[in-house]
Length: 310
Image (cartoon, rainbow, N blue to C red):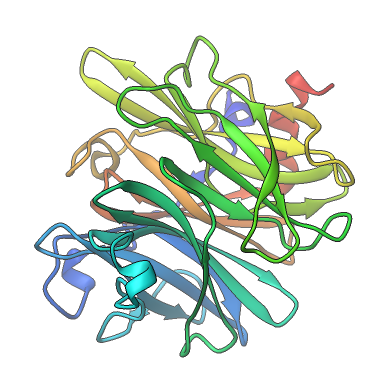
C-alpha cells in the first residue's frame, strides 16, 4: 500500500557481511564505499579493529551479493609525518567516485584534534595515493561529484554536527582537490525525522532530472539517536540549487541487525551502484556492526523527491 514511500527492498539474506566474514580479528565491519571495477563489484569496507581504530579493506563480487574479502587491510592510517597526527585514531566511512580513469576515495580522518575529510586515489585498487586533507575540523560525510562543473571539482560535506551540535549539508569547490572554497550550505535540519543533523551519504548519480544523492537525517529520541535515509536532487549545471528532497525518510532501521549493535538504530549507506536495468544497489552499515544491501528503482527514488520539487 505504501511502497511508493519506501522504494528500497532489503536483500533477503541480509546482512551480507559481518565481522565473522573478515579473515582477521576485528570488532565490526560497516559503512562501505561501493563501485564497479573491471566488471566486478568492489566494496571498500570500514573495519574497526579491537582497539577501536578503523581502516579500509577491499571486498570483491561478481554479482553484487556474495563478496570475498581481502586477507589484510588495504589502507591504514598514514605514517607520513604531515598526515599521521590527523589519522592517528583511524580512517572511517569511505565514499568512492570515479573521475576519468581515477577512483577517488573520500574518507574521515580521525585524530586527537577531531575529524577531517581526507582524499586519496587509486587506478588499480592496489596502489593508494594520498592527495590532501581537504578540510579542517570538525568535518566529515563528504562526497565528490563524478565530473567537474565549470572546471571545478565539487564536494558535498558536513562541517560541524559533532558534540550535539546541528550539522547541515554544504557544497564547496576546488581547482585541484587540495584547496577548497566558495562553501555554501544547501540543506539544513528541519523539525521532524532529521531534526538533529544531516549528512550526505552517497556520491551523486547523474540522472536526467538532476544529481541524485542519498543523505542521512538524525533525530534525538528518549532512547538515543536514530539514523534514517532521505534523497536529495540537485541541479545538473548549478548543484547549489536544490531541486527537491524527500520530506519523509525513505529507509530506516527496521530489522534486528539494524536495531541492535554497537550503535543501535542506524542505517548508514556510503555506496549506491546503478544497474543497466534502472535499479540501484545500496550498501549500508547497520547499527555500526554489519553491512546490509537494499535495492530500488532509480525512478522511484527520484519520485520520492517530487513532493518538495521547486
